Length: 344
Image 1 (cartoon, rainbow, N blue to C red):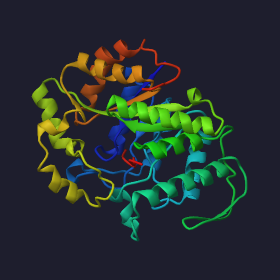
Image 2 (image 1 turned 45 degrees about the horizontal axis):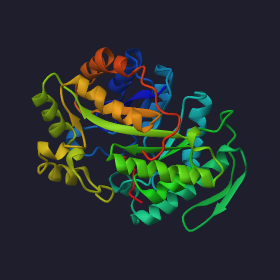
Image 3 (image 1 turned 60 degrees about the vertical axis):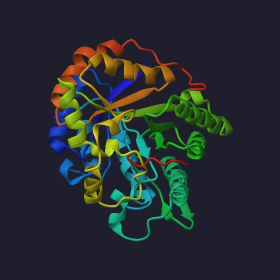
């Protein structure tokens, strides 16, 4: 069965309130949590940006569902050894529930430590080198590693789960989709044209096959942004006011400050959300929108409602959306069909 999850957006909401909504989402029938991992919000108006790793420790206590970050960037704020340490600890505390989402990062969050912000090709190289380091640490091996980007001087994880934490990679480009198939346990992407998703799935499957893995056993994970409210006008008002970055149809990885996003947000108009954020009060349209992605072969779909009306959104989905989707079966294989997401 495909899992419909709740996107917990720490750049928008105070963490204790968000924990309450995650509990409510579990009661409503959502099947898991995707936690945003930010240092800054996209715009100052969004107003929050709590430390996701602390939040996830509490989330594991307050709920019983799977969860993970979408996504953490290795190599800037966090050395891969630190990410492996944190992920293995959460995996040991919550066996079978925690997964690790990784991506190539955004300057918005990573520039805060200073230093050079490299191009996307360099960041992609760093990402996949990090996956190799993290995977070795997850095995319990003593790891020594030295390269242009990372040094590991005799590290071993002593607290680990019985089974390694699965690693999922956020990407929207063919090169890294293939690398993800080779080196990771799943792919995370966002809503896109059918042809692009089909291309990503094909390259992901090709990479898995090159590594001797069965692509059908790997996870295909989607995050979608929606704006639901009792009226269409209110839904659009929420999108423009609360999630203007959803109407910005250009790469955002190199923009450094929430204030710069706020300046650009003044140019965002309702029509800019078309095919990027589903904005409607019609819950049947939400069902159809999600069902389209289930038919493509996604195993997990995490829904982010961009408005402040989280409690009402959870109740609306509990009554009209999740029951309609509950019996929708995802195909066992996908053929021909962030946050930290790159386009390589």
